[in-house]
Image (cartoon, rainbow, N blue to C red; front, side):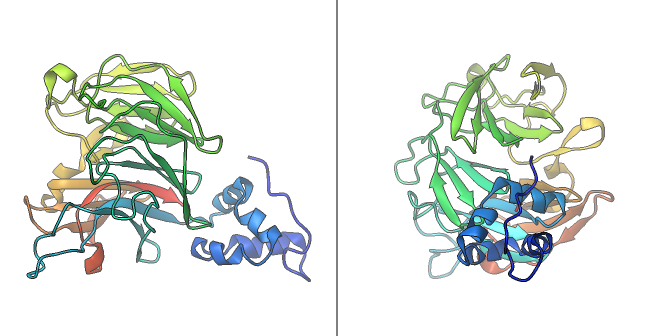
Length: 343
């Protein structure tokens, strides 16, 4: 990535280098307002070069972005939700302890597509697929949220209808693989979405179908963990398929996952790329565990028992110790999935 092109008079009376360093230290939540100061600032804040400059100098912030059940619309007792479930995007920033909610996607003002997937790319949030929250029909929608402008834009639709697929990001490309089509047939196909170019490129398919699989990027590899075939509904595989993002070739890894165990949102990576389930790490998250790796820490949520209250934790990557997080009641709903965004 090329360096930032310095512009004259970023801050009048200061050398360009000093002006750039001052703006680099702005918290991302101020960028939308700061971009209105002048055209130069707007172009700078919205440029990929400025994002990478902030990242390389340690001035981006890691945030857990999560598809979370909204704690609104309850019955008079406040216990059971009224109507269909409504999900939104919640953002938790460990460094500050702040919890926020992203504005709804304009196309879905009353709740996100059910079972949609999210991942991140170059400080942006990417939302894909899912089921229409009203008709329950699968959708191919792609939306990109820019934290600088605090706005959603609609991207190019997914080339194929797929639900419960694996997703991950590497070098500005979102990789999707597996899942099932509108007829519940498990898929082995894979595609890459170039976020900046708004283009989809077909990749070599996996060796077998994998529905309800989990995707993750480890180094320069995209892992598709477990899943099941069309003729073996719910029979989760113990294997994983790994895409080398340099060569574009897949390889099969046997005994990568515990057979019959659903991998969705709960896969962790231990030493020597050994996979494990976060649901087995602590009794407080044994049901509905969801994990978001964030470098030195991992955000983990879940319940101790079916229907129980959600627990929220930060787990130290060195010691494995769970640290409980105090969460405002409006952000205490079930978390379906999540990803880390370096904003």
